[in-house]
Length: 118
Length: 115
Image 1 (cartoon, each protein chain N blue to C red):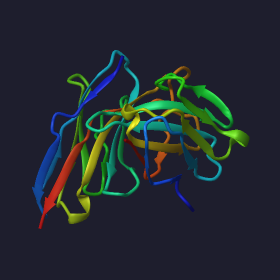
Image 2 (image 1 turned 180 degrees about the vertical axis):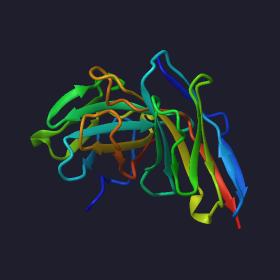
Image 3 (image 1 turned 45 degrees about the vertical axis):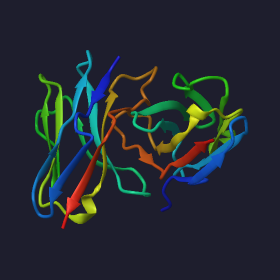
C-alpha cells in the first residue's frame, strides 16, 4: 500500500523569505500523480501544484515550485517570497494513475502547518 | 461558479445520536468523494461516487456510516449511532472526469464533535 509522510508538523517562515516543505512517499507503482494542497483556516482546501510522475521537469506555479526526486521518492514544495496569505495547512498527496479499483483515492500525509511572520 | 459546499460546517452531538452531513458538488461533476481527518491523523478516503453509483467504498470504517447520492447530485453521509472516535473533519470533494490526474475540488469540511 502507498504511504505519504510529511515529517514537519509545523514550519515557520519570515515574510518575503523562502521555505521548503518536505514530503516523501512509498509506492511500487511507476505511474502516479503527486499533489500539494493548501487549507487556510476555515477555508476550502485548494490545489497548489500537481506533478505527473512520468514528467522529469519539476512543476512550477508562480511562487510555488516542487523538487521531484522520483528515485528518492521525494516531493518537496518550495514557496518563494512568502506572503501572509500563505499561512495554512499544507498537505502532500499521492494518487495512482491506474484505472479501476481505488483510482479515486487520494492518499494524504498528515500535513504541515505553515506560519508566516510579518 | 459555486464550489463544493458542505453543511453543516460544525456539529456537536452526543454519543449515540445521529448526524447527517450534506455535500453539494460543483455542478456537472459526476465524481463525488468523501474523506475524513481525525485529529492528528492523515486525511483518509471514505468513498467515491460516480453519479449515483458507489464506485469505491473501501474506506468506510463500519456499517454505522451510510452514504447516499440519490439522483447523482448532492450526497449525504449519515453516522448512526455516532461514537466518540467519529469526531473529526469530513471533507467532500468532486471532479469532472474520472481521469486520475484531474483536479479534485474540496469543500471546507464539516467539523463533527461527538461528546
